[in-house]
Image (tube, rainbow, N blue to C red; front, side, top):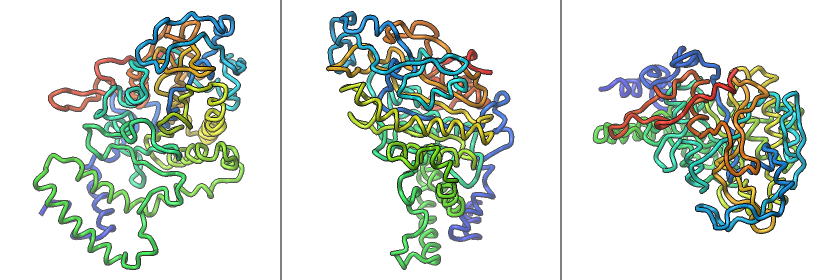
Length: 467
């Protein structure tokens, strides 16, 4: 009889699951004190909240002011043939339909579509010359999350979980909060553990549901789901698991399932409180926009991200927009009509999240990231839409270890390509890992004879934006 079998038999049922989890935490790679301070050097950040704008947020209509587009508006100065990956032939240069103003002591230019975030630019560090190897949504979304264009590779959240473990026994280490309208491009691929042990994949939470964690408790309609029936069912499941493990000793999915049962036992106590937004003050709920249909969904998930963050969840993704041609940042048809609604849905909640983290002291050791998979063209598509562009886009970071009110890199005068300080996902990931106390070149996992890294064979820490 192995140790886990003994613990199961001694405890029985969900109580035994929880007991086994507590007594075997060291063997399962749960928290160690040094993990919170960094593996390779002292960490500045303990937690990460990643805000991902699905569809390719237009830089020259949000954070990258391009007065040259106003001067050259309407002129056909772009490619004469359709570049690879464009969905249509490029049109004339298109100025932004939105007014830009400078904000804060840093004088950062911000479009009128982001009036609330504009008030926080002095807390942010901008990467103004991000680039991608693709201008196709699926590969671009994979690249910004896993560092690779193809599926099968672990995402940033999974690597973080693998490297550092959890901060709490009661909640998942890596939580994903997708848009209520649907999952992003590649469905669950962007939050996959890839070849890492399956336990490190993202736990998807449906924040809009009355039961964000499904099946945590038995439905009241099923009277047969008694405690004794539950114990009997779990005992049977345990026997099945043993048989499965005996013939598949290298399958990490079994360990992941066992860990999920252990976590479920803990979450029966912690999750109802963590997901109960009614416990927040009326002022807090209003600040996140929960009283407005435009901002309610994204605001709910931002507020939930803060609550999970302060309760010990290590890595949280909040997604804006599902995959597809509408309801996201993929504004082919009309920038002037399509961008304002999606921007309005996130602007107030993001500003509230940043302010809330700062007021509670959480911004001191929490890293907040805003990004997208690529940018958009300075050339018109159709009337006043914009096509996909991997040439340049914007990412900002705030919080732990970030030099507030700074910027790194710049795009060309049209916002078509990078001009100085070009950065890829590898550099962004290397910088995030550095703030978590991890050397991106030393964080490896051997797969098919290759020591794989999140940053592949690339990546440099962007020290210019670090405090």
